[in-house]
Each structure stands twice: as C-alpha cells, then as structure tokens.
Image (cartoon, rainbow, N blue to C red):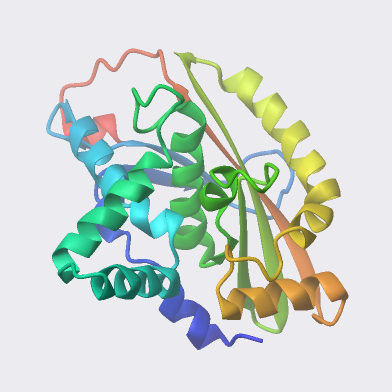
Length: 254
C-alpha cells in the first residue's frame, strides 16, 4: 500500500489555477452536518472577471488530468525514442490529450460535462488531498471499454483510515440551474456508490492505472484494505444570474 508521503508527492501543483478562483468554505444546515461545503467563482481583479485567465489555466492542466506522472514520463520516453526532441514529444502528447476532449465534430475543446469533471479533479486534489485511482478520459476514449460511471475516484490516507473518494460533476450552461443540478447530483452520486465496485473491477490491471494505483484498487476490491471509508463528493457548476452591483473587488468577493 501507499504511504501519506507517497500520496503527497503525487498531488499536482495547481496553485496557478486557484489564483484565478475565489473559494469560500461555509457550514450549512444540510447533511453531512459536520462537513464544510465549498462555494467558488471565477476570481475578479478590480471589476474585471478573470475568465480568460481561468480558462487558459484549465486548458493547460489537461495533461495532468489525462495522464499520471508515471504514464506521462513513459509516453514521453516512447515518443523520443522514435526520433523527437523532448519539447516535440511534449507537444505531441498535449495534442493527443486535447483530442480526448473534443466533441464528435471536433469543434469544441472543453464541452459541458468535461469542464465539470476537470474542475472536480482539481478540487478533490486541492481540498481533500486525494489522488486519482482511475483516470476517466482514457477509458472514455478507448473503443474497447464501456463507459465508467463515476466522474472521479480518488484515494488518500487520513490518520489510520483508507479513504476512497467518489466524485460526480453536474454542469449546466443554461442560466441558473442550481436547484435542478443539486437534485440530480444527489441521485447520481448515490447511484455511483452502488455501482462503483463493479465498474472499478473492469479496469484493474488495465493500462489506465499505474502500478501503485493498481495495487490500491486491487486491495480495495478484494477486501484486504483495512479501515476503509467511502466519501461522496459532488461539484455543481452553473451560470449565476444575480447581478453584481458593487464597485470594488473586495465587496464583490465578500
């Protein structure tokens, strides 16, 4: 099994992305009552929303989501052996990763659902300090495999507990769909919890997992992992319609 130190080394550095996101932590009178709930929006500088900077940071993080550091190094080595420089190999790998995000006609880079899943990946790593076991995008783009249900499945150690985090993302481009998204998110994450072991079993020992994550998944599925808790996380992304009529950055983000 992995240690806390090994997990910490695998967490990605996403400070630059979160420099463009404003996050609040708040307790609400909803379950789970003992947990902090997060709210986030694109950050402002003065009165200007940093939307372009935020999108650029998300696009730049595509490689982090699609490939683990071990898989990235393996693929760079494979490409350079064929006669490319490291810079050219990185460019090829980035192009391949971006292609996994395109719609059927290739017209969009980040479509609705994938945007939410990419944000979910970042928030789980930053605020829950948990690393991915499975990487969904390679599964979705492999014609030999059926769709994996969970939008994210991560792992961490908290004191003496092995924590499996199941994540679901609900993203709406229509104006203010929070209520609809919240209801569907609850139904979806509960359904994911019921099915996740069966689905995970399809991908153990496949190329989607590096060796260390394969051992974690195998231990969880065969029952040898001790003191396990499964935590459920949902991220809801929607277009807020409330007008901002404040004249300085501090009050906007208050």
